[in-house]
Image (cartoon, rainbow, N blue to C red; front, side, top):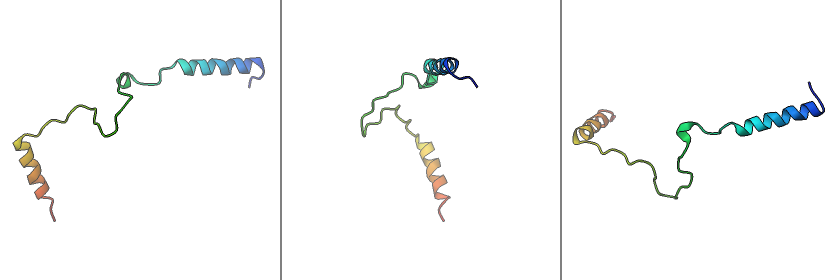
Length: 65
């Protein structure tokens, strides 16, 4: 294990390297960082068609005990 000046130099080099490494992945860049309480800022959900709605109602009806 190194001590003295060489040890400090390695520690400074390691800290500098960690500082320069980006902290976020590309898909996390440019996302909203400031949010308003109670306001959904994402993309709106798709509306269900009547056929999809009936299918979900039938599926839920078959799960009743």
